Length: 68
Image (cartoon, rainbow, N blue to C red; front, side, top):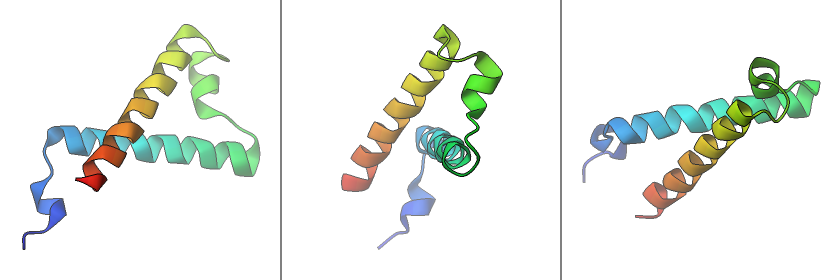
């Protein structure tokens, strides 16, 4: 049986990076009450909402990838 890590394509790596970024941001919010996305793009600006949406879609793709 081949290793899942060796079968990752570019999309899988991008999704992994986005999910890690999202996790780090939530960690910052939980531990320090500091939202890095809002600090960079502005509180709930259009750009921040796009970033949140992209990271959310990446998480859904990650769930799909793990389940198959």
